Length: 408
Length: 172
Figure 1 (tube, rainbow over the protein chains, first blue to last red):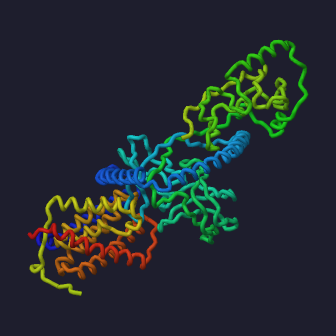
Figure 2 (figure 1 turned 90 degrees about the vertical axis):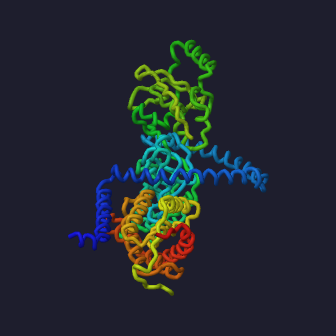
């Protein structure tokens, strides 16, 4: 027996090691989450590698900063001039977009939309990769200590990057959108077709679940649909580069990611999302005819019995600094950044807006079949700036406190 | 290509001190994780595999080779988002086979090293592919030109790396 063991010692050890690894693999495949043992090995490996990566990254960026910030300044003047021109152009565009966004939010409120908005982000540096062609992951220098949790969205200004896969003490793994195990709810920008963006084993990004009878053109932008509950709606994913016939009546759509996934230096982790419901819901269903009725001039009812009191009230209102100026949000307590939020989306989390004031219970509600007619509105003034009039049949107008988490 | 078939008594067996035994695989794992981020083309390289082959053919001890390969592979898996064991199994087999081959033939010259490394790189890919497809149900595309090209690049890098690591060898 001993001679047999001695003769086949190598093979026996080989078989034991292989069986142990196969069993470990089978356990991991069966369980969706990491077991304690595999989690421990991952922690060891990550803690062994990432400190050196952080040091090298720090040295690399430090050297680069010294060179670019102090020595290599050629063309900075011209670039500065171009940037100023760009800022002017963007300011004009911002004004237009702000109006569009305000209108869109009013319509969303009417349709009882409930949307998610990025409320808080955390910047992080990319310090390393998984080092494998089969697994496309990144390591960032923020972890559990910084409040990161799995399934948080990772983005850049260009577009989405991926999601947090695993978190460690001061490091996290990020699964890129071109990994074959990733999936992002997506919507085509023009055709509004919804699908799922996945990675392929070759590292490409494809849009799946679009039927062949739909027309998709190369060049169309793909954005997040918000259906995955990880990425907020509307973030850029990429651009359609190729459309072909795939399997099972679905199109094979290749997408070029908006973010350059192979050269990521800094990313933003979305640590907090605000799910906002339009305040108009409080007033119950509002019809389009109601809105039109609000905006059309109407014959005022009989003047109030106590006209002098009304005049007094108007005088007080004019003297009150909290009262909204025409064209401005009505809430003086609203944070200043909320008034001029550059991002159209951020306009939606302006806590007190003219439309919200107008939508307060009893305020500016026209005579409809839903309830009694409110007090008349002075049509000479812009509708949004009119002070809410008390309605005896409705509760007093309420003003929501401003949201503390402004857009980042 | 001079590959000398020798008996077990003729081949030289080397050993390595502990700092090298631990430091070289750790450095290979670190570079494998760090270099592809800086230079994406480096993802084609498999430095931990080259280290596994080097230790296996130098020590010429199958048990040592398979244990070294298994440990390196497991730690390499731990850095990826994939289940632990894919690289572990593949590198265990490569470590065992390389050390067993090292007992039989002399792989001290560049030509032999290039050929052996090329063969083991392809073997590693085949085993990895089979385990990933068969056990984990991972979708993987197999492309012979890509795999052969990747194996050739690894083999060329391996030849230079082996010469660099030769200075750490200690005769038993």
